[in-house]
Image 1 (cartoon, one colour):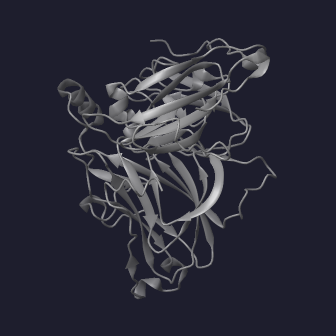
Image 2 (image 1 turned 90 degrees about the vertical axis):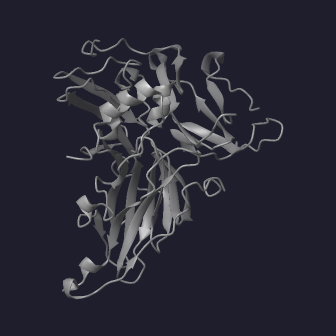
Image 3 (image 1 turned 135 degrees about the vertical axis):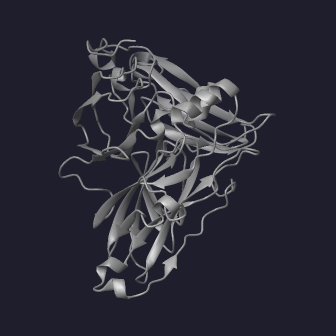
Length: 412
């Protein structure tokens, strides 16, 4: 099964997932975007909060989902195994609690990924030995399908059948390893209603830019003439002299299956118009400390600066254990005297793309004790060391105290 199975839950659920490692490799699973309140032992990054699950062994991850709902995902969190070990995590609102938007007629998952013909472990080993850049993937995937531009799948496209007048909720996940992507649907607007598992102010767009690790929920109304419309993912690569696959991948939004005898008719295909491969402009159209309970400070502001003399590219930074407010971003060097920060209604995310040659400021409430990994979600950059961890100490009382590791935590 590829991608892996979708896990469904509801807000405030207690989740227990037994993972049995049937591969020959050490393995751990991260529940990307789950805030793991007081359960850092189930967070998943190997050698950070757990030793990996060894071949033939099992571990049961246990966590709750307080005040969390939306589209997240899970993936391997050791070496480059998440290239193919991933799946969606869908958290519905509590029973009786509606969406803050009109109920769609249907919903569908779209998981973006990359695929290599060569064994991914061999590629990683070669990269470590040579110090070179990441090899370009052989195909981009939409729900495991490379699309019609590859001989192996020219007649095997992922397809969503739609009916005119209906509204569809698309839960879109970028599970790619080392590439950021644009996504769009020919002749259709998408209304973004959620980002990284958090509701957002709805806005319309003709395309999305998703970094690895980001998710987005969009509403699409089937309001076009009956035809077949391409859904397309294309790469975004602002860095210079970095080889990457420029070939897009396609899926279909198909109105024709709702008609009788549609096989005897001919229909027009429509292709979306997406930004160019290195179009940075399309992406981006000193705060006081906060006092926590008992007089403690629990707000952390972090400034990411993505400028350098050797070379720069966009960096999707992911923080485990928390979501954070994106207060602002811009090009050039951050300057606290003239930077425009949104302290009123900033977006709330778990992964943010720091713009090439620019900066981003985030703020989060450090009220969840444990060790929390923060890293670039381009796997090659994590391998090179673009990562760190926050140690959040216990506060006062049971709800601010991390429990001891579970007795079945894997050993190294």
